[in-house]
Length: 339
Ligand code: ADP
Ligand code: MG
Image 1 (tube, rainbow, N blue to C red):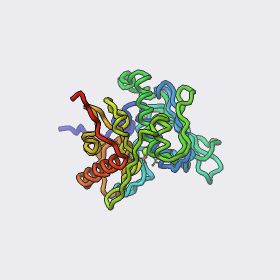
Image 2 (cartoon, protein in one colour):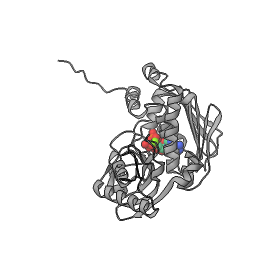
Image 3 (cartoon, rainbow, N blue to C red):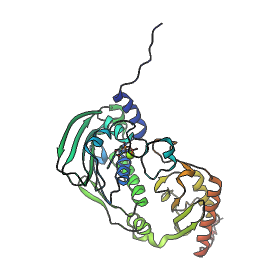
Image 4 (cartoon, rainbow, N blue to C red):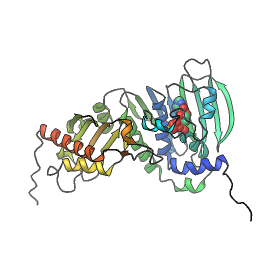
């Protein structure tokens, strides 16, 4: 009998992990923006070319990295955000798995420039297919700039699988929307093929939503607010008369993170019961703040689904809060004579 099991080399393991973390250019955008936020940046600039297929660059004015950390940041399971398993239940950061940079570096040409406030000079590192090609000192402002070029250059099957530029740009903008809506206290700019797409000044949640979805949005919003031991709910729902047939502007954020939840979506829809025309979907922008201990974020690599400890109470609370808000704004039931 012979032994046939062996450990995968790092670059192979990284490429496999990359398959989960990086589905398309928008996934890279999400990870890099989240890292910039975790680094306490107050200004974040996103530059993409050809819908992210040739370039995705995120520049932040956050805390930067030391030369050693800069190098380490591309290792798998390398993170400054948790140390022990219990930390998973106290999370204040977006990241914690320590695999985004390792994954991106496995499937793109990556350039990192970073400098901490107290350092005279910064560090510049280039990586191709998980291999460090160069590391030098450089002159760069405080903060970090990471570029990922030629995504999936070494996995033709994945590269061919990418959709048209229009579709990939749509995904990037959707991801950008989710991040910027959760963080109105950060300034964000976005450029595509050298033209400015967004220029978002520091503001509040309502104004950030209006800046993204257009001036007319303001009159459509009904504020929602409630605070209990379990959860703080704040945000806005769209007035029923503006509800559309297409599901569009539906956003839940939990502790500053965009999440998808069919269950909570149902809670919101049921609060609108009797107020909407057939097949219309309400729009909502709901920010929930809960004890990090009462949720589990670590159920999927992209972290857009989470588990709540007390889902049923949350459902009931959300439904009644929204019902109450709609009632306060004297939103009358729709009289549908076509029934
Ligand atoms: P995670 O975010 O899960 O920790 P990443 O692979 O995304 O893992 O990043 C690895 C580490 O690199 C982070 O924990 C952080 O210490 C550092 N890092 C990444 N991006 C930045 C950035 N923009 N500014 C400062 N540090 C960063
Ligand atoms: Mg990260």
